[in-house]
Image 1 (spheres, helix red, strand yellow):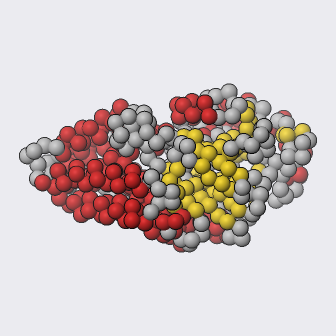
Image 2 (image 1 turned 180 degrees about the vertical axis):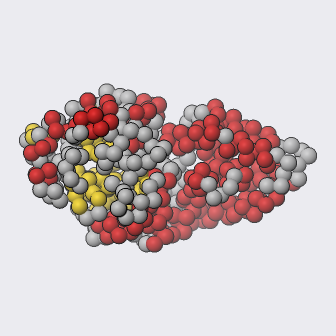
Image 3 (image 1 turned 90 degrees about the vertical axis):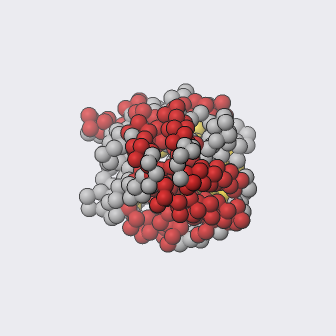
Length: 426
């Protein structure tokens, strides 16, 4: 790994790993902000005018999506529609099965796609889970789409990476979510309901089975994606009839309940892809742990496969307090993608107390910066790639904005690269 670009996309995430032979791996690309700053560009404008051209000359381009929240996904969808073959390879997350062999993320999402208004952001998030693979296969080609879950691996310019979370099966779903799916199944199992209810339940089971089959092949096979797409389209044709069912209002109320919505959103995070490099020998500068929005419980469950230290650690869930990295894992550098957003959350103060150098896309959500008016890195020590230990304030990138730092980590905004000091003008 030659360098890392951490893009400032507001409340969202887009991190690009640069390989040693000119290839790139983009990990997530999304934002909850329609506009990046008061006078900044729109998010989609930034994606198409800054991110896409920046890597057009790369020897190879791959993309890994950690999970289907808008702030990680929506930029990818825009790129695929505008430039379908921009990425040669797409690594997409597989919804895990529970102990009963059921993929409740898919089943719950199907209910939302039927009974909730599709114009709500909540519905769009769910529909993204259902159509992610089939849309990617349609736009980029079946040979480009690879499903990933714990145990899967991939390469970037000869460096091997391994996925350590989520498991393919035995995933622990929250009772609120599993209970909601069971209640909805019971509602539609009423023998007095019209035949469309039973037909939906049968199609739901067939869709989940086809989705599971689709994810057994790497890359995804065209015929498997087509089967999944066809079953979903058949479900869509039933929606007008299903919305007339006597239980439709009750189903919508259950799905729209705040507790249910939160359980689903939290589960998307809990099932987020976590990956790291595969060590060849001892610790090194390429050691990296990418955590997406993984929950503390998920990281604890995956901890047995983690190393005791990393050169680079990506703070989960934008560095917020509720997702503060819970394990005793050392890191030289921490990546934090955060920005202003009403429903977001401030960066956990605990990160400022760690010895690692923090690389933050914005100080807007940082309590340390608000309290002290300066960057928490000013007294930190950076172990530069050259082997020297320096203060970040002496970093060449701090003295000359736009110049690359010895640590190889760049915070990107438009065409400008900046240092890890958030009180340096960006």
